[in-house]
Image 1 (cartoon, rainbow, N blue to C red):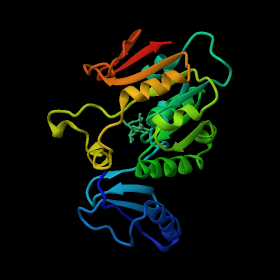
Image 2 (tube, rainbow, N blue to C red; image 1 turned 180 degrees about the vertical axis):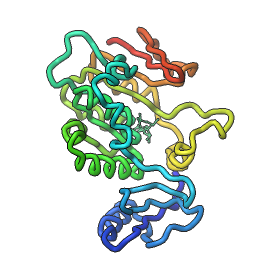
Image 3 (tube, rainbow, N blue to C red; image 1 turned 90 degrees about the vertical axis):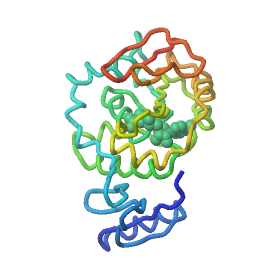
Image 4 (cartoon, rainbow, N blue to C red; image 1 turned 60 degrees about the vertical axis):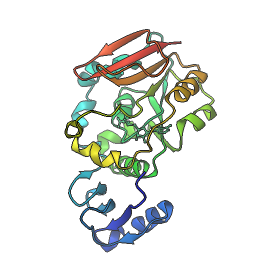
Length: 246
Ligand SMILES: C[S@@+](CC[C@H](N)C(=O)[O-])C[C@H]1O[C@@H](n2cnc3c(N)ncnc32)[C@H](O)[C@@H]1O
């Protein structure tokens, strides 16, 4: 992870939040964003990661039309996670939460979702997005089904003492050959990423929870996750969900 990241606040009213985050990340605090400096900025829009040019912010309200019942029925992830004879209030573990865009689809489809995220900056962005979404009437109930745990899922997953319906894994995509193909918002996030997670260990820890299935998100033509053999796959235009029935 790039070491230098600073926390900024646009107005005095955001100073307290900014100070709290800077303390947690053990980093400097400023009241102006400098060009090319990786910065976490608090302003009216919430918490934004920026380098003075590109910006990334978690935002659940923006894509709320994706959460309609009609749309959820079509979502490949929801189809991939679904099983016959589901428990009431089923639990899904998202071992690689990111900005929670996949998790919210599952929560909107009625699952309780426990999300793990080990990058403290991404975790802060996700937490802020959840706080803002709680202010939106139609999202509050959905967000209440989502629990964020900061930490490495390969170490913490085993502490869950409930059998989940499914464990969902979406570790970083293999590097693309042409960096121009990487979406702009991911360029900023990639500056934060730990180089790689032990995918095999993640799979083994997931299997240790004895879920009905493990669902792994891959690029459409990407390799299967190390050493796994999907029972079946659900394919979209650019993404594939490998489902392993246990
Ligand atoms: C491809 S992104 C996930 C995107 C996510 N599915 C979404 O919808 O926003 C992978 C995320 O998993 C996190 N991650 C990778 N390995 C992890 C681990 N062992 N424990 C917790 N988080 C991990 C990374 O920091 C990154 O934010």
